[in-house]
Image (cartoon, rainbow, N blue to C red; front, side, top):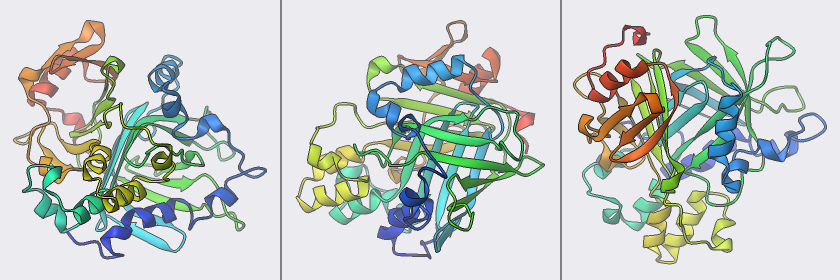
Length: 361
């Protein structure tokens, strides 16, 4: 992997935030009267209420889904304010089904290679823990506006986060909302930040391109809420993304949860000598891999690099109960939220024997 060339590694999260906020202008520009917003549009509104299972299920039942950006995508360009990053700066895997998504973003650092050889987080130094906090993964529901779409009513997506690496208690102040501009062949699209500046320019731009074998059949399953710790698995074409939240019962401290970011909180905990609690906040899991071939279900990139090269699942751990719309994984119940494989396709998928000619794009 290549060293980040745009800035010091510790600055990665700060610069990502600067870009998505249009250089720190989002709260001024994204507001009434030009760009009004509602509290329920905020990314963490439903997460804080503990209602993501119910609300996402309601939207799905109401068929508030769309396939416009379904697939596995990478990001060759991110631009906002006076900063930009690209695929040499970070590896991004954005997997989207008609409803659920997982977006994994990992800076390309030389230290990732060293971290592959450790057994776990306890072997990392204090500075390593701080640097580990400088990456990102979030998942949830992509809710689109109603059509028909025209130049006056373009497709606009609002993402609602049920799992978020960067969320430690303080809600993001504006919606994660953006306009979709799709190229005619469906292999490239632009994400334009919803708010615009005084010159009618969008405050940020992300360009997304289809990963090799990024189109095809898709699957999204979500861990039953009885287990407390939320988790989602998504497959698009030949790619999978997996995310599992921190344990639900995190220690509540109003002062700590007033921090705007995980990075600020981990920095503070490490400075106080509280490594154990810092590691709890860094325990959210996120990874990417492929679902067919010799390395089926083997992790090839992860928030925790020591998990690279390990299998996410084995066929003997999974039982498909298609008639009940669920999958049993390691004895736990997962609900099928999206599926275009069908019962026999799922059996082949989890066995790692899938051959899908439709994922050749």
